[in-house]
Image (cartoon, rainbow, N blue to C red):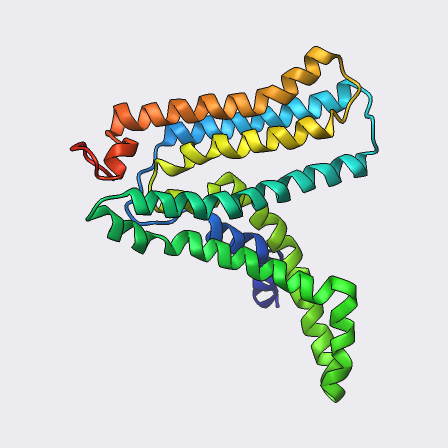
Length: 261
């Protein structure tokens, strides 16, 4: 009895984590032989942790100018806006990068586009599923068309929504964090695209105002700090790729004689 119940207890949390696990597989760069640097990843993680800790401190240190639910909705909206920017900027940057590359690099990069395309397809599928099933209760309207199988359809639709919601949220976060898997095409692309994304978000945040009643100096610090820190980190990452691994943009485009990865 104990032997048969133990796998079930372990399978339950694994099943609940399935949307997040699949989202991680869809958006984490996974090209074999991709150049990785533990120091760069450590600094990126540290910047993220510091940013989260600073945001939490600001919320508790100063009175909120809006409800916590409104603040959470705004942060969620920022994630989706970032994802929307990447959906436009990511493919455009990839097209320009591949078009600017010389042979034989161009053919190699075209083959590597499967990673970003898989991420885009996964994100599009989750958004489309939620739109079709939740928009004006279209899922409930479609159910009667299945006749005696409408109960089955409703159960499948409910399961699809329960899967698509956490998958879509996790996909949006990971899409931004991994810069739409552009690292699968070349390692130089994520640090080039990250500053573009954060400064676009800076424009949205500048128009939206501060969520807390903090002094002007604190508001300015929290407004300019994130894009400035990401830009500086990206510049350092580009320099480290050049000095430690010999990776440059011109080399990636096969327009100089330096080794590429």
